Length: 292
Ligand SMILES: Nc1nc(=O)c2c([nH]1)NC[C@@H]1CN(c3ccc(C(=O)N[C@@H](CCC(=O)O)C(=O)O)cc3)C=[N+]21
Ligand SMILES: [Mg+2]
Image 1 (cartoon, helix red, strand yellow):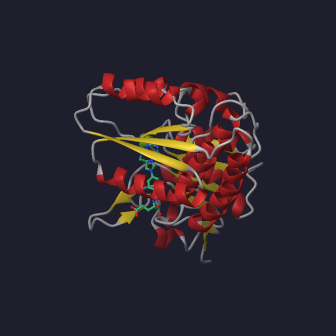
Image 2 (cartoon, helix red, strand yellow):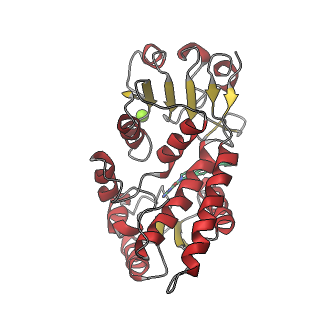
């Protein structure tokens, strides 16, 4: 068996095209406007710069106006909180994204909680986390990466109901919300992580395997159930500096039914969901309800 490759880039383009239609409708409303996203980057982490560039291009494709705020690496927390306060108060800004990781002198949690929950398009605020936990779709925002993974599963005809799902990784931005979304869709969910002893035994049970542990090519073919759908959330650089995921594509593609690639998988989908959340934020700000 050779796995179907899940084209995250093509799916992302479809989502961006739908967002564009909605952006244009919002701009046509009386008192309407295009959705607006503010991206704040502190310092010059090279991976962050790539991401910010990709995001800016996606905003252009989707008719979302984006603004970038680049602050020096030695910016203090107070100065960043002041900027967040200004963006919270700016009615043309629907979504605020503060690029993580932040330099050591800034406490990320303080910054995230300072963002107006109505503008939390990353879905990292406690209110968004709580809304997901209790199944409220009308409040907060779904974190972009796990929300993108759910769309990718849907795109290959996988309904999680009744399936065994294993999430490897337990971060607040991917693993934990991913587990909640799979549970919401009636999967039987197991969360494994770096301190799980018998990892292969657990992953081999998975009909849906989401690899989000942040270790290059750690998921090999022998760890995968034949016919499983495998989503690779990893973004690592290997010894040669090449971008690679948490999944060993070569061995896993011989066992899995479908596999998402890196690059061209979860990365573009994360950005598409950010755009989608920004349009949703604008709809709410313009009193247009949840239609996306
Ligand atoms: N507040 C915040 N929100 C984030 O969503 C966030 C963040 N901080 N910090 C960093 C991570 C990482 N991330 C990526 C998204 C897309 C690609 C992406 O577009 N990847 C392309 C290619 C990347 C390349 O060529 O290097 C792909 O996979 O095909 C990568 C990385 C969002 N993050
Ligand atoms: Mg871990």
